Amino acid sequence: MRNSGNDWESTILRDGFTTSLTNDLDIDHQRYRPAALYINGEFWGIQNIREKVSEHFISSNHSIGAEHIDLLDIQGVNDENIVHGTNADYIELINYLETQEMNDPIVENALTNWIDIESYMSYQAFQIFVDNRDWPGNNIKFWRDHRVGGKWRWILYDTDFGFGIWDQYAYTFNTLSFALDPNGPGWPNPPWSTFVFRKLMENENFQNTFINIYCDMLNTVLLPEFLTTRLDSISGNIEEMIPVHRARWLNDGEWPNSTTNWENRLNQMGNFANQRRNYAIMHLMDEFDLPSLSQVTITRTPESGGHVKVNTIDILETNWQGYYFPTVPIKVKAIHSDGFEFGYWLEFPDSSSTMKLDIQDAMTLTAVFLPTELTSGSLVINEINYNSSEDHESGDWIEIFNPGEMDIDASGYKLKDDNNDHSYNFPDETIIASGNYLVISNDLEAFSELYSNQIPIVGPFDFGFGGGGDEVRIFDQEGILVDSVSYDDESPWPLEPDG
Image 1 (tube, helix red, strand yellow):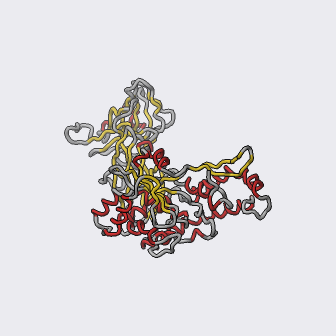
Image 2: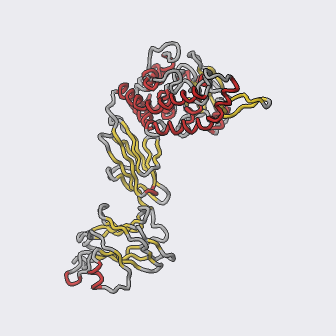
Image 3: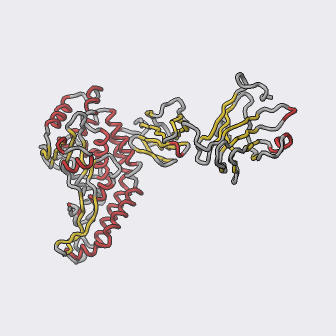
């Protein structure tokens, strides 16, 4: 149980709210739940249920036996308190950082295998954004699995100095410069406490990782609307208890936990949430001499074909916008769903599913996924007519067949040739019965003059099929490719259909 630390006379939720923002990030942190505490039946006020940071906390969250864990703690002085295990490897790490050239690829590789770099950069970026100034010279816990392959990870806790607890204009403070200061005071940011971060920032790749991960957060959990929505939700959990909590301790309007004061402090946190992002971006630009952000739009087709990962973000939206710095390449990866494979990037057709992308101006990136096989109940393109002879002009058309045992509702299906801008939507109530056919024509009158009306026909579509070769494609309502045929007017294709 925790009384919210320095925040006990303010909002009683600051630390719990702050750490909850990392629930979906790669940062070790304490979970939070508010509680009403009673002792022997007597109400004792609002308390916060938190996980205790120990080797057992790590063991349960990472499925590692406690006997394999080294856990260290630094509180205000440069002296690692051994909570569990040994500090020998950490001392070796510090000595290594003090003596190595950081842009040496061998050194970079060694540190990548020594520190969980992405988690560390996430931890640093988050502490910097929330402006936790009881850090980095205090409240530091970090750990590793001491078996082969184990890496050091830092634990987020005790963040109640953040979100403007003492200063209503704290959102303007350059905590990035503060965390990189080589000559800070004994508290809260002495030189030893900024050393690891300063050394890693000497390496260009580590610096880019930090910048991109910070941008990932600024595009997701650190957006003002996300922060204020979460704050409203968490404060709503205890709002009704605030008057009772106030009455339990003091019941005059001047007491810091008065309802009015509580609401004012929440408003100050909300103002920090709304204002901080713009200043954080300016601090990044100033520190690393970066240009203005550029917008990146991520889309995919079909929607069910997979998703795209940008740096650390798995993007599940079909149309997503984020902002990144042009001089810092981002990592993008197309991840296919079952039944699909990655086809290509629409804007970079020769690139692989994973690539580094240099952003220039605003840009769009579209991942195209392809089915690995036709789905059950698929329609089949049975016949294609193009470039008819003059004495047998019936327009361009295709015939599709339903070979399955079930009728297929093809309403909203799409017919396309090799140009995605050429598209025809099947009309509503287009049902193709089992074992039956459907013709789609670009000239209904011409087709009907030459053929009987025994086969259902829909159309017209406003494009034609190429006489020198083309591709005919059918997509279902989800944009999934049902069938496609590429043809030519050269052998082994028959010459007769071409006029």
